[in-house]
Amino acid sequence: MKNPIESVRHFCTIQLEILKDHEHKLRKEIQHCNVQREFLTKTLRDLGDARELPADIVSDLLSTRRSSDE
Image 1 (cartoon, rainbow, N blue to C red):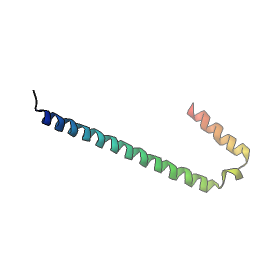
Image 2: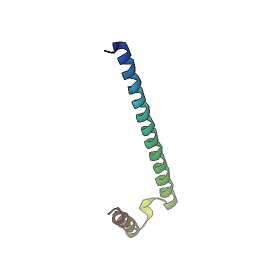
Image 3: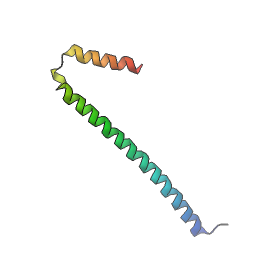
């Protein structure tokens, strides 16, 4: 049977690697969110305030988006 201290060391080392991988994935997700936020913010800024757009243009944009999702 293994030494209990060695077993705990081994367990902790494995857990640290798992946490490191998880942290890396979360950082990538946050980076992806930041890129999306920047793109959407710039798009809104380029379009001006969405309330200034005619309702039919907004509806067309929404329906186009919905149909591409299907």
